[in-house]
Length: 219
Image (cartoon, rainbow, N blue to C red):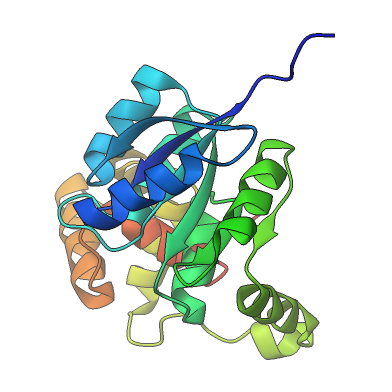
């Protein structure tokens, strides 16, 4: 009987000691093979395209291209690749932004090897995987009455800025938004810059992740 193929993993973290240590831990787990490492989001996107791992184990906060933007890019271009976040951030904004960006799992760096092992094998089977505290937050969020979640998102944005952010979240580019709203492309470009500044988002992808977390851009 042939042996099952191992789950291949790309480890993404900007701290080389942690990254190397995690790669060593994962390499000792049965059924798991580490096939690459990356130190930031840009490297992660490139390595994913080159290696096509089953799982990308992704940190969130990294210099340059962060984990949210990289997750969004990877899951859009390579939907067959599962992204599991491994981070120190356990706030609700980070959790739901990662899920909106396309991550299928969210673990804290305090997780032990057995928890990470179960998460990787589960993600490879197409399951959503969460650490215990994160799972409680996700369940609590969806246990809220719908009206409690249906508040106006980003109250510090103007109605027009919120409208543009919603269209961005639906995948429209500047030209399409301009046509939809009967505005010039220059006006849309300026409004998009204002939105990024107000959201403190470094990129459009990060703004889209935040917007989807808040319920914008959904059918």
